[in-house]
Picture 1: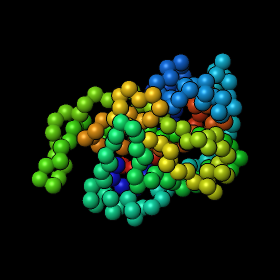
Picture 2: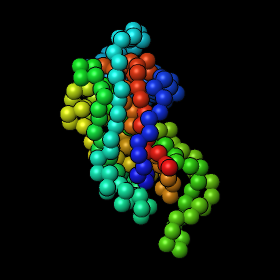
Picture 3: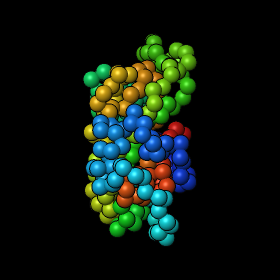
Picture 4: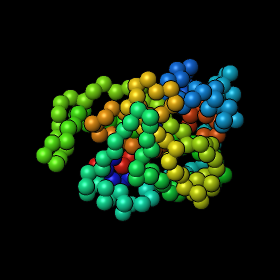
Length: 214
């Protein structure tokens, strides 16, 4: 999770990315599954709504990482986190500033972590070295920022802090934490979705931002 400038990915709906929101598989959700998330967002999990019509709203979401200098310092040393079974929060804190959103439209912010490469590592002679092929990954859980959905005005004035997201290496985790493999490199991804109902996520306009390598 070394620091690099944000790069924006495609705004086309990626149904594979949002597959967890399209069915009853609750493994990707934090506690409570789809019903709890829908209730928290004011939605109705009993029947998924039809895809929304084009609302004609034009926005251009942009994201800037807080504490850039701190992230750059960690990047120079080689960002490293010890992941435990009990769960640990990301450090440095993953906080962002947002701009370019439509003030009145509601947005949902999500975060996940994906493998940065296909390698497993070991620390040897004061440096990290490739130690073989990566271990199989657990199905990833998409973490939804607890303020979601909120108007663009809220996100642009308050920003978003993902300090409540916890990482664990416990494959039997029951707390909804993000499960990762120790001794692997990961890439955090932030997804900005213009959407006022959690069950409509697969059909809504979104943009993905990464701390990507250069």
